[in-house]
Figure (spheres, rainbow, N blue to C red):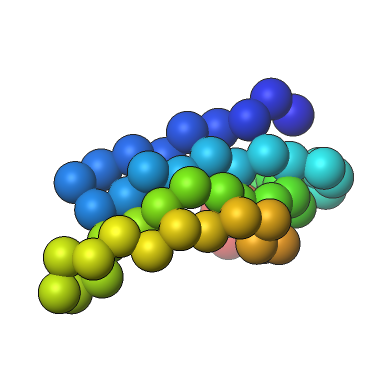
Length: 69
């Protein structure tokens, strides 16, 4: 639940989670995992013309999902 940094040549963002949804199902052959963090994004991104766009308190999510069928 700590803040995450996402950086690259056109991205400088921090994601601050406020809720974690975790699910797990495992029936040996059938498997599933889900971790969804809901939170806010802040920082800046660069558009196609090279201009930086500032972001603050943008509600969103990040997730990690594994499935095995």
